[in-house]
Length: 197
Image (tube, rainbow, N blue to C red; front, side, top):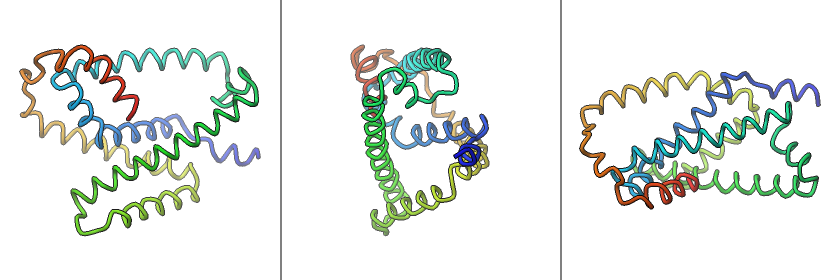
């Protein structure tokens, strides 16, 4: 067990690269479309609002985790609420991740088929992604984190190039009216869309 624990550890840089990769894929695939359709011209204001709320949640979470050094979320559930709640929480998290994984693979496969592979069935693309995921899991999480660490500079550089090349299309007047479709859509519906993504 001790050997497995040593092999599963990764550096802070590797963990940060995995988080950045997940967020970038989330941002590129579906988040802008959902936010713009919900908040309209108030998308910039909504992003600032979401950033403030997310920062507050992460700050509170970091303070809570400081009370439990070397504990993960499951250990904290066990310590705080007992073994029964810990088991319920573990099952709920597994169901959540399996469901979200299915949705994400389906959305990503649909995007690829629609843009790049119109002559290939979506089922084949989904099976390829599942096979790649299974192979990567067999290789271990450490190998995934190392590959992510290698690819993240290329991804970030590509995003910067795309952002700079599109900068001539940024027109400040498109951010008006500031509240877009209204305060409710900006602050409530926009937050709900972000949570559901």
